[in-house]
Length: 153
Image 1 (tube, helix red, strand yellow):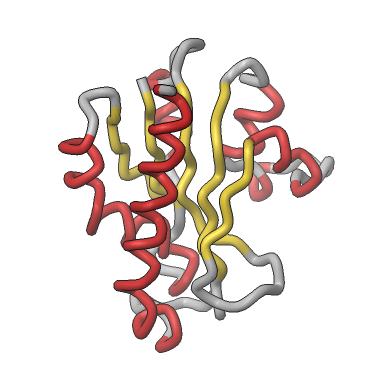
Image 2 (cartoon, helix red, strand yellow):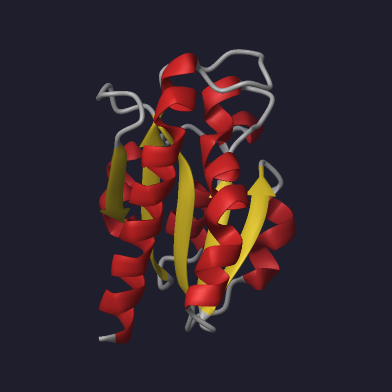
């Protein structure tokens, strides 16, 4: 099964972009393939770890801060994400990507990242991401369909 995890803190502005995008396109993706299950996780990933099985492919849809154009969608294999994981261990640095790469290395998957403009206390996306929201959702949908096609090929 392909499990898509929508990650992000919706009270931190652009950090919640993964959740907002998947709330918008999640049902379409589940209709596209019976092999897809969308989980709106937010920041409570720990409650969803039992949803992951060894034979699953995991897709994380989350915000990124790579210093590139805000709204740009990047797709990385989870193995490529090892370089972004901080070796420092504390409760504030724990996240689903880190747990997957440290505790579930056998799980195949991808990060579909959406570049943020700013992260601040706000229930609203930045104007830049609001303006690009339609474009972002289409791009994320296309990229996930491409991943599904590659998995099923």
